[in-house]
Length: 188
Image 1: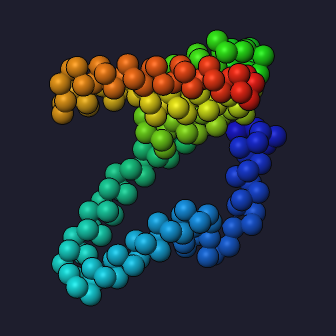
Image 2: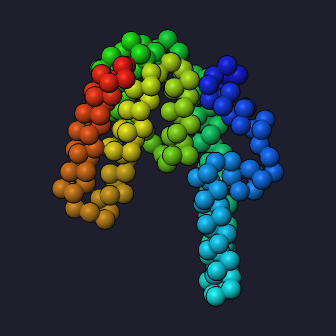
């Protein structure tokens, strides 16, 4: 990650000020709500249903163990992608001067990004640091959440084809409409 990139500076600034309390219960209000809520829930379970608390904690620890290498690999991959992306090409395709077509393209590309947020969000942050405009970054996020092309096989396990097709079609329409509007409103 380039030391001059906004993402690097944000991470460096945050880590320079991080206290022990921030490490234990999170640095943001959202993180603290989740951590404190979890502690309260487990406190309740420990008193009222100790076997449930123990089983849930064991399962959570097992999931954490399985995801740790995946999350680490995803962050390293995103960092490598960020170093490989040519700034001029990113800026030309989805930067501020790319206009509505560039922002719509960003939304559609977002819809095809593979992986969970642990992998995709760092990639989008690297794209932003490499010259993508604000509208394009927002479109990438909306496309990723709305279209989710790589969730189609999983959806087909649970739903009929017409439901999955309708979800993808609605996601594409919403993403394209959002991208076009946001490109005009805040500028590409």
